[in-house]
Length: 129
Image (cartoon, rainbow, N blue to C red; front, side, top):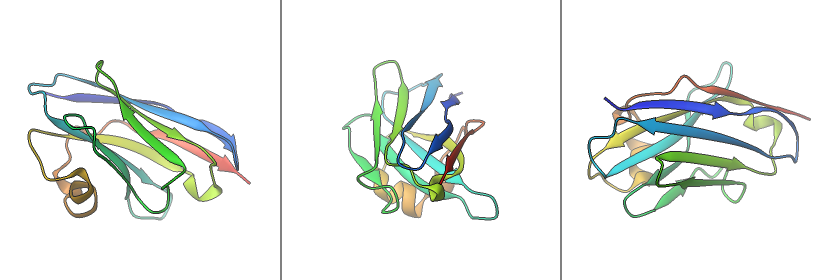
């Protein structure tokens, strides 16, 4: 069973940077997609970014495009580098995974988010103005 552990986050000022990491273990296949989601108080969960580990393809929500960068390494850690942070980025950030061959992660994140599994415990990101 795949397990994910999110870490990082914290407090930053607007315009600053933070990094959240998702450490995955227990993969049974070499093909997987990790997505980062966030949920702010009183708001619905939002898909932020995703990466297909097999081909390296990525996707970013419009709200974070050109500010956030997702990456993965051979140690099955997926990082989300967050630059030029805004107060609207304040949320609990979660990572989740889909194993196996899948549609492009853009489709997974925007249309099939319920297919993600093994949700990590979440890490809080707070951006002050």
